[in-house]
Length: 558
Image (cartoon, rainbow, N blue to C red; front, side, top):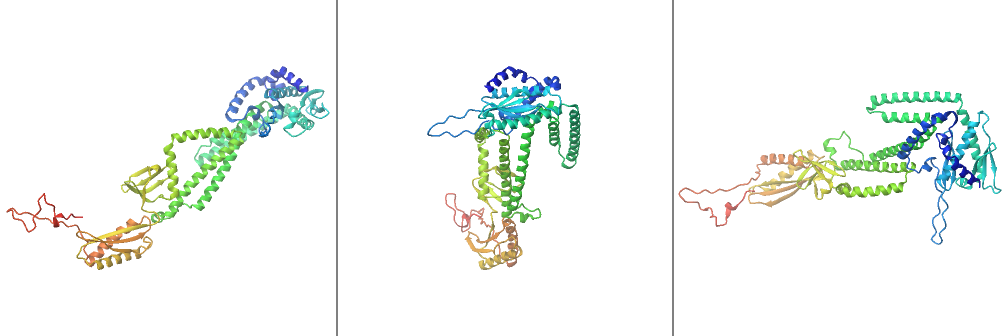
């Protein structure tokens, strides 16, 4: 019955309780300024709450307060009725939240809160002595203790019901005792804050906050322009935001704005800053770990040393792992921050899934490039610095990422391949390289002497370049007989990328050694027969067009 009386009385007095700033417990000398400010506060609050607070309006009034109790899972044998939904509304005095009251619907809960706010405001306006605030007492209305009534003086303030106490796990009498202490302390503090001495002290504090904020901003601008060469407006904006948040808490008239800034801006911003710092630290630790696993190429290495395969692959894999790990860390940090801010992650993930499907359909080629890039790195087909041939193009790999591969050919052209187009690739610098050396000598040459000279020359080159030639030269011998010469063949295993320099040097030394030993390098020859004007020809006349060529006339130079 007491609850019904409060609800009926709340409907009669709701319009008065919601007028101006009475909703926040501000009456008396602050009421003339409240009408214009309340309208502006309402618009700013609506904008900030819609922008920054994704939670429901009831739950957003007090952070961390659960809106619904935990519901039991349905039984497959017999369905049990679900407990009724409980709505809550905040009771605010002098701009500060005291507690929340419960009811079956949000409207009923708000009516109860408005009624309590109106009665507290009335008692506060009637009190004059800050040292003697109105007394708050507790009276139990039921023998079982299922309801308790809070009174200010002789007037009833609030009936504490079982729904109010269930969320705290207490009895209504115990909860009423706690609320009575909070109300008494809040009334005494509200009376003190209405005194001129407190207002002067609050104004001085606000001035000090503004002065400190101004000094910090000047220091930030100086440091940003002198040392960091970047604008410092993000830090300046944050400093002024915190200053406004602190100043609005000093005056009862501005505490509604303080509450809006806290729930809509400061709390989400602090969550993102804390999570961002944690993500930055995790990213830095990951970078240090990957730097130990995949050390970067030192700047002191020579061009020959920088072409070592293992170092190039470590650098490539380290960069990809660092970017991938950092991206995952920031994605997880974003979801953690949104979860702490009260965002419904299930709906967000569902929306992100639909967006991901749409993006994947619209960017199929890019997804193929990414998958192909991962396969290239895992299979170790090639890396930065390798010399490869893709189709008709050959060159040195300058860029390799998950999307494209760029090579520069001997003409200096930079050729870009999407990774999805690289199917068959020839790598000339994977792990080791080899010089396939061939030289042609005439049939009149002593082949054993020529092969001995060739092997000796290659062995001398191996002794002079031990860091480039990995194994002793392998003389294969007479490779083939040609119409006018014999081909000698030899192989030399070298470091990746050094095979061309070794081949050029070997050609030079073999030519010098053959000249010294009188060994002739065979050249293509062609026999030409001429017809005299008298019509007489030599013993081997040229065949007619209808006859097939034979002998030297049929020999084609190679």
